[in-house]
Length: 78
Image (tube, rainbow, N blue to C red):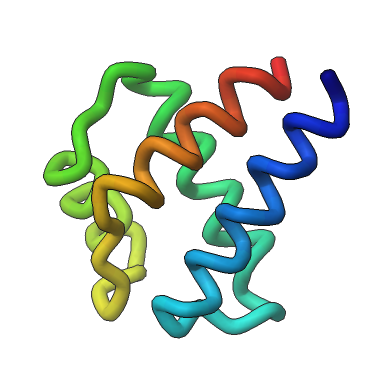
């Protein structure tokens, strides 16, 4: 099971890097994403983008796939 969660996180990190997120900023972004899903586990992509933009990630637009990868990764890590 742990390997599956790690695989999800690896795919998530790869997708975020493709969107231009730098390696040094990745931990903070993951923390912000996790916080958003803690507030609302059923958050949709549009709302997630609004929230992360308010948190200072204005240059990043999370697509449906990144949103679902993040949700699944954080949900399984519990």
